[in-house]
Length: 118
Image (tube, rainbow, N blue to C red; front, side, top):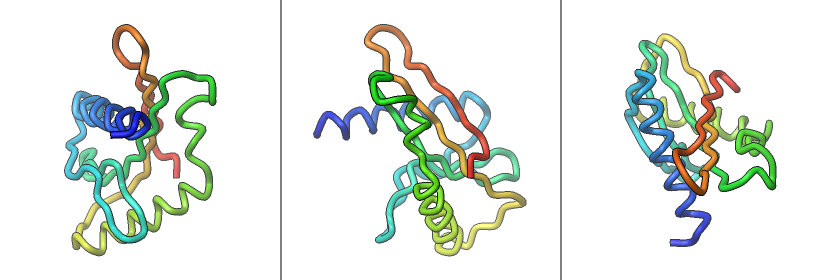
């Protein structure tokens, strides 16, 4: 596994545990279709949450959340719509969140949950 992929997988594991500790139920991980991938899909009460996880090992290239651009948000909205259609899922509300994970050399990762970014 490439180092970048390993860091991404680490971040997705950390983010999933973080969301569950915050009371969300992770219902799907790494859902793929020809148009792309959703890192996590979760339920927050009656809200279905599509989660983009961004992980960095340092801040040298900026905060992990800064990597989610308008273009990326548009793609996430399309992927969320496709997931909903393919799963015949119904939710009172739908939300797109970002979980930013900063992997530290020592100690626990720093996690920031950005709700309703798109």
